[in-house]
Every structure is written in C-alpha cells, then in structure tokens.
Image 1: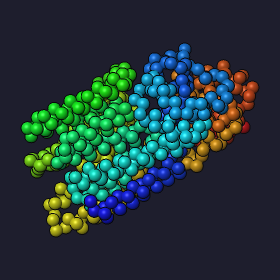
Image 2 (image 1 turned 30 degrees about the horizontal axis):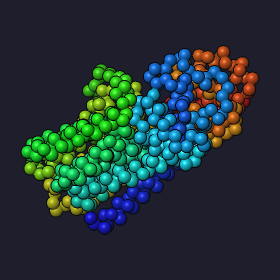
Image 3 (image 1 turned 90 degrees about the vertical axis):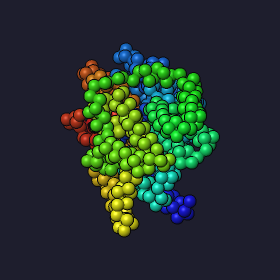
Image 4 (image 1 turned 180 degrees about the horizontal axis):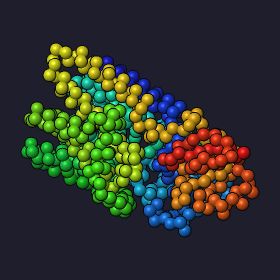
Length: 509
C-alpha cells in the first residue's frame, strides 16, 4: 500500500474527527428521544423506562402504569436515570434485562454503560460521542480498504473524502445511538466479503466475517437483513462459478451465526414480532426513504440514488462479466434494496420524517463508493482529460458536499437549539422547575432527563391535567418552565429541541 495514501487517510480521518467534534460541541444543541433513551437504557438499574413501572415492556405499558408524573420529583430522580451510580458500575446484567423490555439487542448499550461506569454519577454526551468517533475511524479505514480492492488508491481516498464531507457521515456520527456502530460493522463485513471475492481464502473470510456478523446482529435487527442479503448474493455468485462447497460453507456458517445469536438472545424473536407491518404506501415510502438517502449522500434530493445504483450495477456486470470484482457492486445494490425495503415494511416513513434516514446510515459509505465508481467509469470515455477532469470533479464535489452539510441539508437531524449556545442543563442547575407535556405524551418524561439533570426539583404535568396540578405547582413557585408552546407573561430563555419537537424554556415572571 502506498505510504502517501496511508498518511492522506490518517490526515483525512483526523480532520473529520475534529470537524465532527466541533459540530457536536458548537452546533448540535438538542437531542432526539432515542439519544436520551440510549443513556437511560444503558445506565438505569431496574428502571428502563422512567415514565412507567419497572418490569413492563415498552409496548405493553398503559396509563395505569405511569409513574413520576403529576408530583414533585427530586432532581436526583432524573439524573440517576441517565447516569451510573457507584454501586452499579459495570452492571451488565441490568443492561441485558433492560434491553429485553426494549426493541433492540444489547451490544451498543453494554459499550455505553462501560464508558459511563468509568465516571459514575456523571452525565456527559461525550461518552456516546466517544463511541461514535471510534466507529467513524473504523468505518473510514474499512471503506478505504474496500474501495482500493476495486479502484486505485487515489480513487479510494476520493471515496473516503467525499463520504467525510457528506451530510450522511455527519448525521451518523453525531447521533448518539447504535447506528454508528452498525455502520462500522456493516462496512467491515462488506470489506471482508469484497476481499474474499477478489481472491481471498475461505478460512480467512469465515474467521473475520462470522464474528463481525455476530456483533452486527447484537447491534440491531436490521443487521440480520443486511447480512442475509449479502450472504445470499455471495452464495449465488459462488454457485454460478461452480464453487459449490464454498457457497454452502458460507451460507451455513452465516446461518449458524444467526442461530447462535438467537440462542443467546431469544428476546429477538419477540422484538421482531412486535414490529408493525404497515404494508400501505410501500412504494411511496421506499421513494421517500431513497430521497433521504440521496440527500445524505449528495446533499441533494435531485439525484435518484436507486437509479444510479441500478445503472452502475448493470454497467459493471456487463463490462466485467467474468471479473470477480463485478460482484461487489451487485452485493452493495442488493443489500441496499433489501435493507431499505425492510425499513419501509416495518416503519411509517411519513410519520418519522427525515429521522427515518438513520435506519439507512449503514448503507451510506458503500453507496458513496458506488457513486465514485460510476463517475470514474464515465471519465474513462475521456482518457486524455481524465486526470484533470477527475481532480476538478472530485474537488468540486467535496466542496459542494461540505457546504451542503454546513449551510443547507438535513439540519433537523442536528436538533439545533435557539440560540445555539443555550445549555438548558446548566441554566436550570439547582433550580425548581416545571414541565408541561402534550396530552397523551407522558413518555416524553424520558427526554426531560437531558434537560433537567441538575435541577433541584421538577414537576411534570400534561396539558389536560395542568388545571388540576396548578395548586401543587404554585405552592413551590417554579423558577423555570418548559412547555411545547410559548406561555404568556413568561420571559423566554430559548427554544429547545426536545423529543424530536420544539419546546420553549422560559423564566417565570
């Protein structure tokens, strides 16, 4: 491998790490409900959901099970939900049990709990960011290794650079959830598969791919879909090349890994059975999701990513019908189509809006690889101008993607506060506070743990119960009020991104 390429990759990763940290620190201010749930599920012992009784699944709770509402709560109640207490350090059994009552496998939460255990009784978004930064570096390394199997080192660096400048990378690694880990593991599995297809040994492939796939399964159930589609493509390709025993070995080995996962984590069967099957508007939902993917990869919804993916696969298969490298773009395309179809099948894309793109984060690096492959093939039609045109196009694309991430793009996934500099946790430190939630949205008490972790006392009510709770609230005279609408006669401190919505923090007159 070219040493210059290695140094360039290291410098690129360092720059992306710095950029991600700066955006996280100075631009992102609010959070998605899933992000605060990451901390609650990882660190709360015996209380996975702060708004309902312990021991009840997230899908089985009812209003009769609600707790910690319509009463004064000590600030410690919220803080202890999202932090590790000294006696709970490295309590992995609690994390395991919490995840049985949630929707996801436990690996990411075990990692987050481990980091938080290093500093008990301390809450910081930096714990989750640290995992994301490691995943960022791993993703870029394996994206480069995959790309250089199919192209030159220079083009492989272009792939990594363009991905680093994309909205998708920024969203993936500033979102404190398991999707950053899923992206890194998915890229690793694709790299091991590409290496095997381009001349690797079966034993080496199985030795690296199977543990990676197992970790993928323990990170998110969509990892099962991704690995299944990838393995199916690989097996069919091996069968077509009359490598029957290798195809059987790959297929049954991956089935074995899935069997081990289900044996160790039988809760997966119930979790996957609980996913709703919408079935309505499938094609329109798939189109919406691919538009979001296109925006994440290129900064624009104008580029139909699905069409480009299909066109590239057709071009490569025709051009390199007998070449082993031709199967890799097909694998990327098929896994992308299968995963996005699964997402649309179990999700309401309309209701989720732009946040639905997080389910496709793991596809974005490989789709950037496909895009660069297509562009490089197109430039081959101009052999004399190719170096100059290539550099100009790559530079222009990188600048465009970077500006798109900074100036336009899907800024909703950054959950920006207004003003950006407002830190509600510090503003309300040691204060008596009140929060008013919309009717029927008691679950949003979870998100308040990130707003009031250092408050002295907190009263949480809902709009339909506010009149009944006013005597108890007024008796304590809260200094700060958080509400989903502006309140008259109250000094506005700022607008906060809380639980995927806009809330208003004000000081009582």
